[in-house]
Length: 198
Image (cartoon, helix red, strand yellow):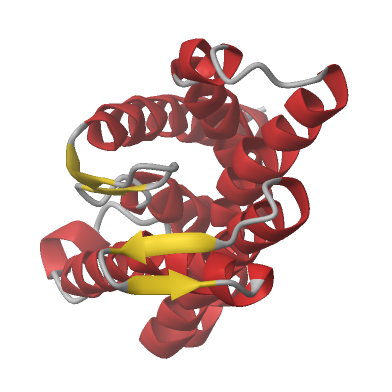
């Protein structure tokens, strides 16, 4: 009976922590350092709370939390998306490739959490890279991205344009996310918040 109560308590704690981190990630996503004209922005480490859940409680809970986060991001931008005049098919694919898939993939960050600091940081890089890849696919396959990024810089190749354009905000996002995650993981007080699984 004691074991059941302990497991129930741990499950409730993990759900509460996930809810708090989900709310924090949402707030941080609204604090934009820079927004780009055709989508994408550099935020104030909005992926870190979701990454924390994945590292602390495993990639399954990380993916579930990130999946909820993806829908929140979608609904936050829904007004803007509806103004684009998309067809039904384009709307669905935009929801999948620009929101549901990329933001859910953040939850995979804890895949190597048991392999120490290097494993955790590898997981972070993999998660952010997978999110980036989804945005690149969307830019190329859905939006047929090609054109001007900055004054004087025009890229006609759709793949190259999408790779460069999405890297403009995803690379800074990766640097900010990795740096803050590394600082937190080196902090002994913060590590006490992570269950013994890691």
